Image (cartoon, rainbow over all chains, first blue to last red; front, side, top):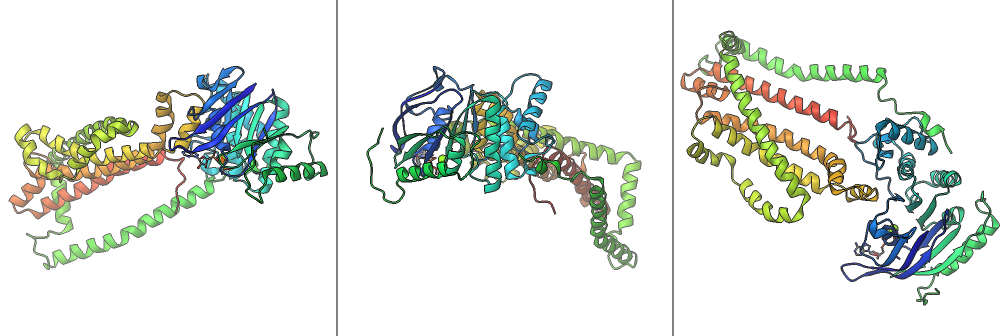
Length: 249
Length: 276
Ligand SMILES: Nc1ncnc2c1ncn2[C@@H]1O[C@H](COP(=O)(O)OP(=O)(O)OP(=O)(O)O)[C@@H](O)[C@H]1O
Ligand SMILES: [Mg+2]
C-alpha cells in the first residue's frame, strides 16, 4: 500500500522539517500521525498528497510513485477550503469527471452519507463550520479514493461536533474501508480513530514510535484501555523535558 | 450522526422577508427623494420670482422644456447615441486589453516584473495629458476620442484584475492540485471565479472613468454628443442646454452603472457580504 522510504524534506532556506522517515501502511488501515507542533506532520502529509514534491527519498502508493500522480488520493484539509462561488453540491463534485447527471447523483449520495442531505443548493457561507467540514469530507470521498489524507481535519471544531465527525469518519470507513492517514495533535482523537499511531517529536521531527492500538471497535471513549494508551503516548511525547532522545527506530 | 442540523435551511428566500425588504427599499428610496424635491421646488419658485437671473440659472421647468424640445426635434437621440457609443466602444476596448494583459501579468510573475514598472509609470501620467498627442496622431475624429476613453478605462480594470488574480487563495488552488487538474483548468475553474469580485470592481470604476473621459474628449472638439451640447450651451450662452446635458450625463452614468451593479449582484450572490 503506502510506502514511505527514507523521506526527508529540506526547505530552500536550509531548514529540515524532519529527518528521514520510513513506514508502510496496510490496506484499509487507519493510521494516525501524532506529534508536537512544528515537527513536520503537515509537511509529510503534503508530500504524500503530491502537493509538495521537493522531498528526498521515495513515497509510493500501490507501487506508484507520488511523483507520477496521486489520482487515488483524497485530501481533507484543516479548513474546509470550499469554493465560495459554488453551491454545496458543486463543491462536492468539484474533482469529478463525467456527465452532469452522474455527478449530481454521486454528489447527492455522498452528501447524504455525511449527513448533509438537503443542503445541495446552499452556498458555503450559509454553512456552519461543522457542516462545511462535512462537505469537505464528502468532496474528498466522491472520487472513491483508496487513500484518504486528513490534516487536523477537526481541530477547528468544537468538542461536540468533533466527536460527531469522528464517528462519521468511522461510519464511512465501515462501508468503504478506505485507508486513512490522519494528522492530529489530539491524543483522544487518535486513540478513537486509529489502528496505529505514528508518534513524531522534536524539531526537526523524528519518527519516535510506531504504536499499534489493538482496541475493539466500536470504541468507547475514555475507556480504561484507552487511558493506558494515552499515558504511554504522553510519556513518549516527552512534553516535560526537552532532552533530545535519539530516534528509537 | 445528526440529521437535525441540516433540516433547517436558511429561510432567506421566504416570501415574507422579501416583501418587507422591498417595502423597506421603496421607503428608503422615497426618503432619499425628499431633499432633492424640496430643492427643486425652491429653485423653481426662486427662479420665477426673479431671484436667479434667467441667463445664469434657468428654472427647472425651463431646463425640462429644453430637454423636451431637443427630444422632439430628434437631436437628443443623436447626441445621446454618439456619446453612449463612444463610451461603450472605449469601455469595451479598454476592458478587453486590460483583461488580456492583466491575466497574463497576473498569472506569470516574470511578466509582471517585465511590464509592471512601465504600466505604473504610464498610469502616473494624468490621462488628459495624452489628448494633444492623440489628436496629433489620430486626428480629431472618433479614433482619438475612443482611444482616450479606452486608456481611462484600462487602468482600473487592469489593476483590479492583476490584484484579483494574485490575491487568489493558494489553499483553493491546492484543492485543484489534489485532483490533478491541469494548469488551464485550475485557471478557469479556480483562479478566474475567485478573482471575479475584484474584476467587477475594476469594471465599475473603469466605467466611471469612461464617462469622465468622454466629456473631456468631446469638449476637445466634436460635432455631436453631450459634450458638444456643453460647449454649444457655453458658446450660445444657454445655461439650460448645459444643464440639460449635465442631467443626461447623470442619468446615463447612473443607468450604465446600475446595469453593472445588477450584473455584480447576480454573479456574486455567493459572496459573504455584510448586509445592512
Ligand atoms: N515552506 C516552508 N519553508 C520553510 N520552512 C517551512 C515551510 N513549511 C514549513 N516549514 C517549517 O517546517 C516545520 C514543520 O512544519 P509543519 O507545518 O509540517 O509542522 P506541523 O507538524 O504540521 O505543525 P502543526 O502541528 O503546528 O501544524 C516548521 O518548523 C515550519 O516552520
Ligand atoms: Mg500542521
